[in-house]
Image (tube, rainbow, N blue to C red):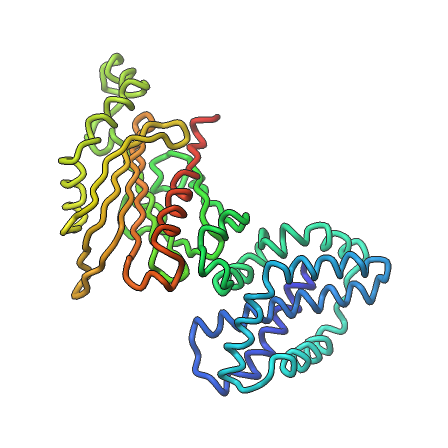
Length: 350
């Protein structure tokens, strides 16, 4: 894996040097350089293994075939976009870059043991990016894959996922949970006190936030000073059921949307559901949200889940303007529902 990392860096430097003088710097363009460089690095590494150990050549060919099966469309798309800017045919700069990288990495060797391990882990670590080195590169390829641009939900269904685990994060209030999301999405920490993570789609049109509140803290109650019967009730299934029933009303839903500065609400629906076996109230609606001087049209889905003294609120906002840039509204809604329902309350299963 170290050889792949070094070769990928060398390829990135060479490709950047080749085209940077011809194009102004931009994050989007730099990402495409990184994605293309990684794919060349993978191909170069497989070729080196096959040449060094002929008995592994057929396995290298199969690995390359499987890599191309899932990522070739992305690579071709990015190569065409780079060609439009540089005017250099992809095969030409590919040969030049790999030639330079081979020269610069000629003293790097890969043992047969490392080669076999690389091939054994190829599908998981290289194709699916479940590795610290390859994850960011595979994310770029997924963002540029026409298949997943047209149908974002398919990326998740094909197993390209990341998992966020709270692991005693200070904003989790002591609750340990996990949630899965597409590998091409970006994750950041929420800026508000109770929002632990913010998940954003590649086109920035889908946004999912996870908010955690401790009911004791919100009510400014010391659980050590509560009557034992009351404390027992709060930790009971009856409390969870009663809490959800009390907030599952149209009046509460409208009040909550108003607090979020959403106006001209339509298609409001209130339902009950279960997430990881826990009772939850689900609000779905369309409306408008004012951000500065801009007014956004959006679809909102909000799950309020109760577990003991923890209130978990997972909200998806989908900007419905220019929806053709990244799947349909229906597809985005379905994907957000799947992400929300991937929640696992780890403490519950200890």
